[in-house]
Amino acid sequence: MGIEYLDILIFAVIAGFLIFRLRGVLGRRTGNERPRANPYNRPSEAETVAADNVVTLPGRQRDAGQQSGITQIRIADPDFEPAEFLGGARMAFSMIIEAFAKGDTATLRPLLSDELYDSFADAIRERTARGETLETTVVRIDEAKIAEARMDHSTAVVTVRFVSEQISVTRDGDGAVIDGDPERAIPVTDLWSFARNTRSSDPNWMLVETATPEEDEDWHGDEEGGEAGPAQAGT
Image (cartoon, rainbow, N blue to C red; front, side, top):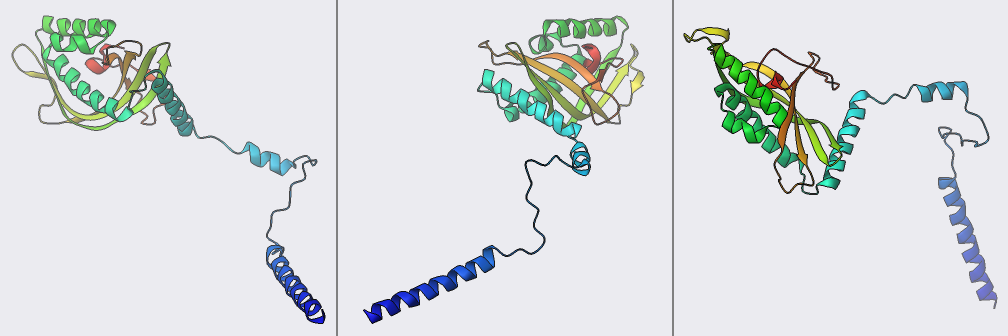
């Protein structure tokens, strides 16, 4: 019995030593800890000012709104994939720009909404009546990204910001250049809105609006029309 009591005493001493070491490590305070908040204390004036100084950046708000719009479109159309959509938008961009320059209304007709098609067709007729021709080549598309996405009832609307390099030349009836430079590509920024009825079996999107952003590169959604061309014909 004496041996058993001795074993118990030894184990007790070892346990006490381990507890002491653990408390020494886990309970040690270095002086850098944050004081625990008292839920019954009102915040100090300094704390209130600090909280008021926290500002959500506008860019992050726009990104959040854009993602929310994409989510809404995906709910209405589970097959919607932004990457695939942008690939199709890139092809449509070049096709529409060059068809407008050639006066190819047959190509434009299925790609545009009725209202926008009428605007494009009117611009082509006016150009033809003046005896002018337009030559436009999309040299490259440097950027195509979704600037805005939303649901308008059952219609999905996606605005794409295109940054491209284009050569655009207007000639008179004699072939003389009256606007543009056939040897120089210029940077062009466009905002094009595409729409699709998500309840329709037709998977194709149509261009419903074109615009150019303000000179400020950090576009906030304000738009202004230009003088001519497909980027302005719908404004």
